[in-house]
Structure formats: C-alpha cells, structure tokens
Image (cartoon, rainbow, N blue to C red; front, side):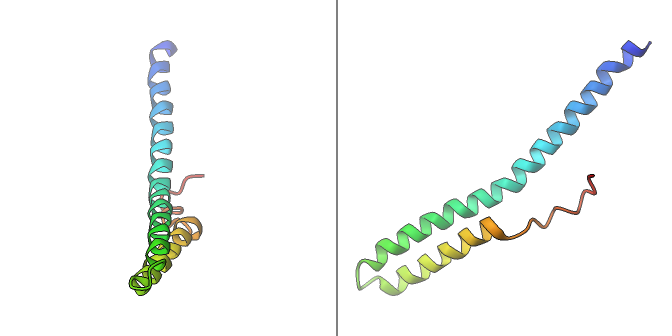
Length: 86
C-alpha cells in the first residue's frame, strides 16, 4: 500500500522544486532585463555624446542607463519575505 502513495509524494516534490525554479527565474528575469537595457542605454548615450548636437540627450540616456544597471544589480528583492519559505 505504501507503493501507491510514493508516486504522489514524488510528484509533490517535483512540483515544489518546479515552483522554486520558476520563482527564481521570475526574480532574476527583471534584474537581468534591467542590466541589459541599462547597458544598451549607456552605449547609446556614449555614442550620442560623441556628437556635440546630441550631447544633452546622450548624457540623459547614459545616466538613465547607469541608474538602471545599478537598480538591476543592487536593489534588494521585494518578494523575499512574502512566501515565508524556510
């Protein structure tokens, strides 16, 4: 009779680990997207600053890119304490 319940327990462990992986991917996706978009904005800003005409716009885009990279790397995750996982 214990063999009947073993597959159910195994599925529960698999679904729990699947949820943990999905949660990790969900948390890391936002950070990775912010770092990638911020890096692109920094490069575009530097390229625009090479011309005097686009200097003000390039400075704004470059600084916005730096802020996004810093946000993606150093801001703590707001969802850390919501689930109560141990």
